[in-house]
Image (cartoon, rainbow, N blue to C red; front, top):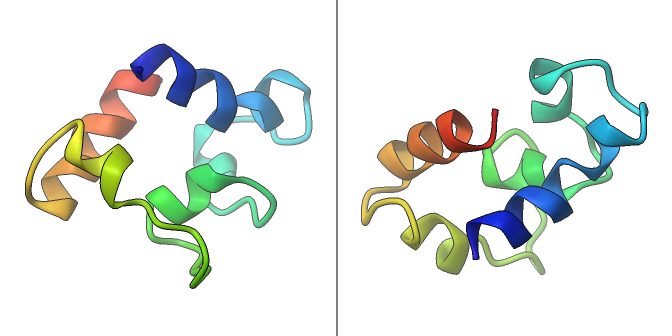
Amino acid sequence: MLELVRYIHLNPLRAGLVTDLKTLDNHPYCGHSVLMAKVNRDWQNTDKVLELFSEKSGTARQIYRSQIG
């Protein structure tokens, strides 16, 4: 499951649309920025992905970020 999350959310980085993870954190056209709580979309539910990493959303974001980079 983690590999699928990495594949989907790192696509803008792999495609050269952003230059690094810090830029990807704020990229408005991908789910990664929503997972990192930089962009809000009411229709995108991040709970299931974040629960893969921790029950606490802040901790889950830190672990997610360390796992994808």
